[in-house]
Amino acid sequence: MTDHVGPDSAMPDSGGRADDASPQSQGPWASALRQLLSDRIALACIGVLSLFALVAAAAPYLAPYDPFLAQPGKSLLPPGPEHLFGTDLIGRDVLSRVVYGARLSLVIGFVSVGISAAVGVVLGLVAGYYGRLADAVIMRFVDMLMAFPGILLALTIVAMLGPGLTNVMIAVGIGGIANYVRLVRGSVLSIKQQPYIEAVRSVGAGDLRIMFRHVLPNALPPVLVLVSMSYGWALLSAAGLSFLGLGAEPPTVEWGSMLNDARALLRVAPWAAVFPGLAIMCVVLASNLLGESLRDSLDPQQRSR
Amino acid sequence: MMAVPVLFGVATIAFALMYLLPGDPASAMLAKSGASAEQIAELREDMGLDSPFHVQYLRYLGSVLQGDLGRSIVSQEPVLDLLLSRLPTTLELVFAALIVAVPVGTLFGVVAAVRKDQWIDRALVAFSSVGVSVPAFWLGLMLILVFSVHLGWLPAFGAGGVAHLVLPAGVLAFNAIGTVMRTARTSMLDVLRQDYIRTAWAKGLTKPAILYRHALRNALVPVVTIIGLQFGWLVSGSFIVEAVFSRQGIGLLFINSILERDFPVVQGAVLLAALMYVVLNLVIDLLYVIVDPRIRYD
Image (cartoon, rainbow over all chains, first blue to last red; front, side, top):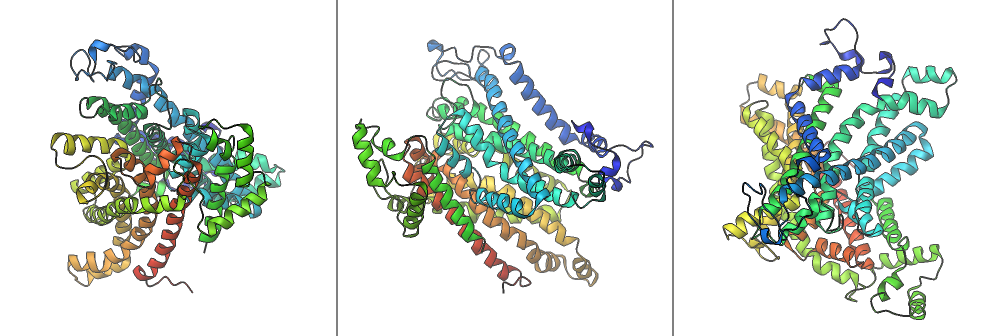
């Protein structure tokens, strides 16, 4: 979808590329991509995230054991050659569970961020483009959401909808909306002042067409940064809710609920708690750092710093 | 003065929490006792649940303004008393974390800015990235593992006394230090680029005088802002930390109430947490005047 971004004139900030040596003028996306690929931290983050995605996708081939298989004779074995991450109370292989857990944990993060971004971008677009009443109503709604800091909003929504995995995704998704609305609204406010918007309007384009074809693509780069950064937050929040017993239910394999199970066994089987947490941290750290690198590469003003 | 409409909105959300619920509070209350449909209907009438939406809403707002948050379904205690009895435990934790995180985060940020691009800057930035990425519930378990299970230095569960506070406050602060540090670093870097700092160098002031008398004071304004935001994040973060360390604060009460579907308590806790956050940010706005004499509220 990124190649639908119009000609260079459509990017207000494409003039600041003094370092662009190539004779053919590249779009800002291409230049940002080049910048990103020359950033070692960004590459490492992409590597880590791809690795986890691969592990999740290939879980049945990579996991040494069935993650649900209880082996009563192998209860609470410490990490060793046979079970690299040890076993839990009922003799399930912790490594296999971490591998399978990646599936649900990564997907939960994606769905939550998808909800935040989809709703937030549309609301921000409408608020910024139409202004006046629409803006006032949407921004008061955002103020209300922002009065519930951090995970409190997600907790409140889970309280309303009831515990469960689907509700956790909805709750974390709603919890992230406010940032998207504020970000997109800000970009739209400046984009709609641009002469090319007026030009498009004078040729007779309707509001919807202008909003989605001409304003939205130019408001997207910062949204991409926020997606990367909020993915970590969403995964962390969803895992937190599962840890509290409000998300994934026992038979399901998910990192947060694995930690919840491991809690009671902390004294006898610390390994059951160590590894799911490390997995969460790696993914969250990688997506946060990738977000920062993305921000630096998409914002020409940041590059000189 | 944005606080008033926001608080009104928060009360509305808290009301909606109850109103939009699948089933209604009366059947939720009597569900366990196996009451008959007539008894439920009677309770509904007693609670005013048969009134139209707007009547219930206005009645709710009225009772909230009078400090009446209803009674817990589980313990039958007034919700307000329940919350107030748990409040000190939560505030103790949040303030302990704040007292650690703000000075340490500011110090780290200033040091990183002054030593920009040197190894200590890189190390501190890396530390702050880990700080904001590590799951609090996992860090809590790991600290319990090391300091309670293996070393036996600190208690793992419960509240009361400084020893009980060290680990949970440490977990909360660890998450917050990263954010405070980022803010302080960026802000200090901005200030160090200003003309008046160059002037100060030019007229031969000593480095400490420039950094601490001229730069730091101006760099603190955004840090004060972030304290207000951090307070909110710490309160919500404390909910999870309380669960990890079994501290009987508002957070644990809130989570148990969600699991037990004790909605008046959930409603009250939401209202209280948002109220604290909004009021604190109002206080922060007023604090600006002290930190930055250029700001005046007329």
